[in-house]
Image (cartoon, rainbow, N blue to C red; front, side):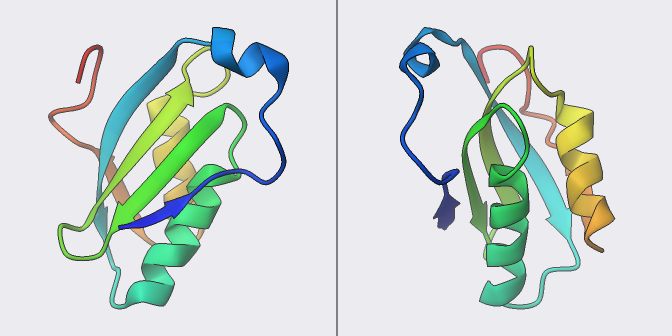
Length: 95
């Protein structure tokens, strides 16, 4: 897995946010550089606390503030850089 976290220190209120964990099924990745680019793109989205991409399983796991961004927006960010992305069937509350 290639983890990415936004740069800088978390803000004091970061601990107060309720984060949602979701999986994203990815297509079009061919190497670790692809996985790293996707991970960095997801981590750069507003409200994302953590993003990890696995080349082997072709999936991303994202922890994010659902008040700041939605799962469809995260998928759209990945599609915007040229890869396929759909929410995992295991995504959702408590997943």
